[in-house]
Amino acid sequence: MIALIPFVALGLAVALESAEHPSPLEAYGARRFPPQQGKGRLPPLPYAENALEPQISAATVRMHHDELQAGYVRRAHALLEHLNRKTGSDRSELQLWRDLAYQASGARLHQLYWDNLTPGGSRFQQGPLQMAIQQDFGSIGSFLERFNETALAVPGSGWVVLAWVPSLERLVLLAIDQHQRETMPEWVPLLVCDVWEHAYVLDYGSDRAAYMRAFWHLVNWPVVERRFAERGGV
Ligand SMILES: [Fe+2]
Image (tube, rainbow, N blue to C red; front, side, top):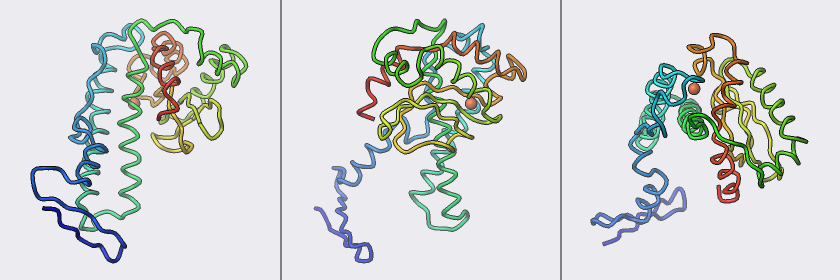
């Protein structure tokens, strides 16, 4: 039995179903929050924690993934739960949404980062991504220089991302402050580099340039190319 509950003030009618079958609204929620994300579970690394050595130590990966990323995932999930059930006013509405943007972006960017690294790195291949980089940055060498220059200039808590922006029809470099500031609508992340100090301080101290040299030895270019190939569907 389906009961229609009119929300007069909103001008909406929502179909609710109490039987075993999920209502359209529940099915929509299940799609938005699939189990592996909706339960706040930390996605596993795609390789062993010592697999990125010698460029990135197991100690860095363990701390970075098991503690820091886990915290973002946990807090993002807690915020989603809170927002779904919000009745009180322990935090302002503004602060809740800003906190969610920070925590959820932190959780997601870290997953993109781990996934675009691979033990031993990979070869950059000719193809659509290479042609797009040449078109938008002049050459592969120029792209690498500008990515590095941006990475070295980002303040101590941020990211550098090669992204596709559909409305601009070009690749861009995003110098993200924290996890969520200085982005563009519709941006599609292709290559993500964490330049927060925690990403390299155990292995390189304050020498971010050394970390960047190591980063290029770990990039999983097939993953970057696949993200570019799928950009239209994101
Ligand atoms: Fe990080």
